[in-house]
Image 1 (cartoon, rainbow over the protein chains, first blue to last red):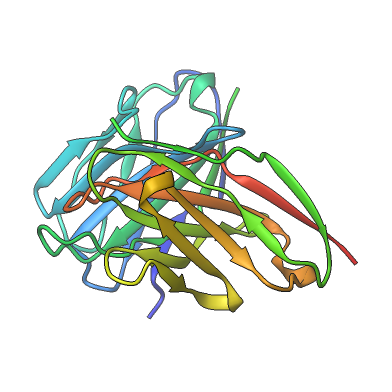
Image 2 (spheres, rainbow over the protein chains, first blue to last red; image 1 turned 180 degrees about the vertical axis):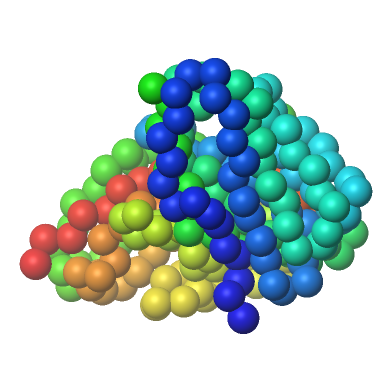
Length: 115
Length: 113
């Protein structure tokens, strides 16, 4: 049981490049989400999903796309990277019990630098 | 919209001393409350959570937190800090039934041997 895994661990992009941050979980969790962490800002929610085929925006969705074709995977796409997207990105997952919030488990993070 | 305030950006304590990290939230109803810890270069690990019931909750690594509705607070405590507790601590809140966590900005804990 690997939990939540993220790849790559580090990435450097040039402005305008595109890339996909990978996130996978093996706990059969329905809920998955992406956060970004910036110094002095805590974590902010980018996008989330409550199951395959269902995604929605969080607090800071601009510049990011997501899709959820399987229960296990929830990739985050940057279509045209900007320096403002330099950050550490965390993926999280949990069971989805409808009205009852469940504990979210976090991956180790991806540190992204956009030059 | 809910918000979370962690008033202390950085706290330094001596090993063996007691610790209290403050967390205040703004939310109309009873929130779901969490404390996470992040060691350098690592992801977040859940220390404890409060959903309902007993307002004093016990977590891992000897931590506990108390929910005080009248003060809109959920402070984290540990009676005796160990050097390995040096990390950044985040308080988070979610609305009942929502999975969207709102995080505080974090408190960095340094431990003096």
